[in-house]
Length: 296
Ligand SMILES: NC(=O)c1ccc[n+]([C@@H]2O[C@H](COP(=O)([O-])OP(=O)(O)OC[C@H]3O[C@@H](n4cnc5c(N)ncnc54)[C@H](OP(=O)(O)O)[C@@H]3O)[C@@H](O)[C@H]2O)c1
Image 1 (cartoon, rainbow, N blue to C red):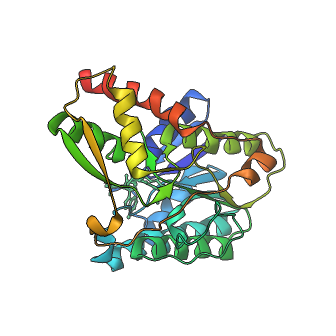
Image 2: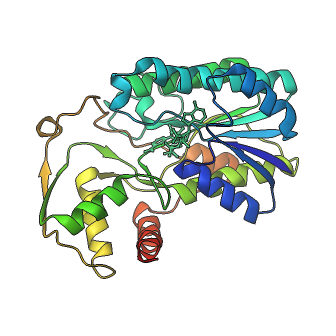
């Protein structure tokens, strides 16, 4: 089956492209500058010519703090972009898998968020992604909005790579310990998306709508950092010996972030038989890949 991946140069998009080709999809990947999601004329032309019955949108404006000072661009990419995609998918009879974020929630929950929980973002990035979700769900019945969280992987910049870099440079680091969430490996998320795409390509029934997918288990950025160092230490030289747990208030950032953004992933398990691995297991595997790539 033909498959169109929008945003194929991002950390998720690259995994989708590599794994999608390996899985036998006739895949077209596209990103800036050939496709600018903010340009409806370009979206129209690409979707008309791709011939793919299913589009995956992995493109986004993902700079959470920078979004606070350039909201126009964040909304153009994350809200208008999915709107243009959904309009064209509707017009051409295509289905759309659109990736979204835990940051559509305000973080006040005391149990993992369900797909049906009200969204209430507390920053520009989260609001722009929330608007993108509404743009898709209100225009296109055959859509999957797939929210994920704390994404990391082999490609692009992410928390794991930042910690490895700092862990080689410094003896002591400070990491926030009062934000809880679920680290998600981009390769695992790509496999989950491709499993849905396979099901679609086989003509099996697909229950469209909003879903959550993230690594299994809840942690804090501080515990995440400590685990990165624990797992990486036998594999590489690290200077870091102490990771101080600090409060969010001690590490001011431009954007506020939800204090708790764990996602309940029962629905995707029930409807698609897709279950994420424990986050620590995925992290161990990805660390080996990142360190091997650094050695090359
Ligand atoms: N990263 C996380 O921690 C996280 C957490 C939860 C959810 N998500 C969601 O997961 C998805 C994938 O995230 P990611 O981390 O893989 O993102 P990423 O690495 O930042 O990749 C996003 C891709 O979109 C491209 N892009 C930006 N503006 C565009 C435009 N106007 N038109 C077309 N393409 C454009 C980027 O190109 P440039 O690099 O050239 O700008 C980049 O290749 C996104 O929907 C994101 O919101 C991410």
